[in-house]
Picture 1 (cartoon, helix red, strand yellow):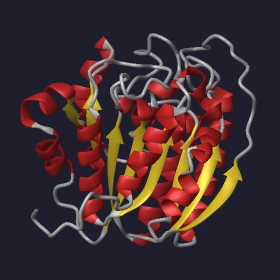
Picture 2 (tube, one colour):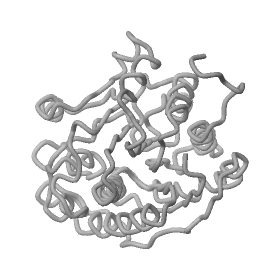
Picture 3 (cartoon, rainbow, N blue to C red):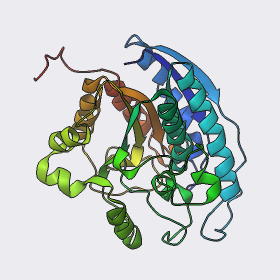
Length: 307
């Protein structure tokens, strides 16, 4: 795994339905993300926060809320993430709401095209985020990033990475899904997304789900993890704007992160939807940093392969 890590703050809730995710980057810093990562031998550079338009808090227009502002933020994210990858570093995007995944993952996909690498995206989330302007009940673009990345969305967003679609649905593995809108459900099925929802995890276990999600990774695969904090059960992670009961437990989430770390392939990361305004004494940010630490190799024991 790349030991040169860059933190990029994107303090906006422009695509969300509630205010507060704009404070997420600072909450992660308060939760000691820099020294925690440095304790694992990583060279961490905090690039500070990107700048973008303020949230006008307006109703949707033609099925999209704040489209122009969302485009501006995602362009800034795209350029920042791509620059870190081009410099040979591992970018960690500190969100901010999950609409920013459009800019981040389109930058990763662009880098993969430029370097001839394959892409695997793990989307850890309570939601499929595969809505369109026709399907969305809210117009909030944080419910649309996967669809946009797969070519279904407004031109300004789907073309950010320079190729349409930015990624194939076959590159994506979704873990922990448990809230999908009715029309979105049909669209996910039609697109052929690989979804390991909570029923699958309940029946088969997190280990089996992750084994399948990580299958066929090789030395030429760039692994990107897009971690929406609402992936976690709200009993342990209340600081998100869109809580959905019945998510992974602490141990299930740790296993998920540790199995990703075991691949040694993690090459970029998003940490999204942390909302300190809804948190309790920053406990969700502290938990998120704990799980990020596991992504970078924290484990109880020195483990032997196969054990």
